[in-house]
Amino acid sequence: RVDEMHELSNDLVVLVARLLRDVRRNNVSIPAASMRVLSLVDQHGPTTVGVLAEQDRCSQPTMTGLVNGLVERGWAEREPHPDDSRANLVSLTDLGRKTLSALRQNNADLVASRIAASGRPLDDLKTAVALLRACVEQGAQRPRRDDLLPDYQGKGLQ
Image (cartoon, rainbow, N blue to C red; front, top):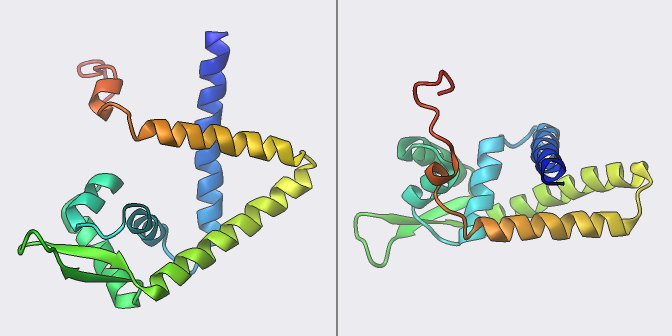
């Protein structure tokens, strides 16, 4: 039973990643990295480039470039951090919120059409969403990534 749980959990992660890649390919007008950053700012509210970089697991210079692109497109803006004069807060503009909403609607349209074509009942979708939501909510309480990974150093798996 534990082996089956692990195997199905792995399948879930792999299939969610594949679906996400496919959905991102469907949104060709907006780069995937821009979509990620828009979503992060939406999720966390006004935040610093450093926090966004940490959340996206990229370098601060990389995130600075991504945020610059959002600002240039009018999707985000920077404002002085009220508690740290060296930092700025990044937030979504009205256009950024509208763009993100349109992206999400396109994503929903694509996935909904595939689910409808599958013939699966709506209750299956409700169960899948509830399960994924529970996993995401538990992720907010997860230990550090380094605590989860076995030590592969010296084993050729780095």
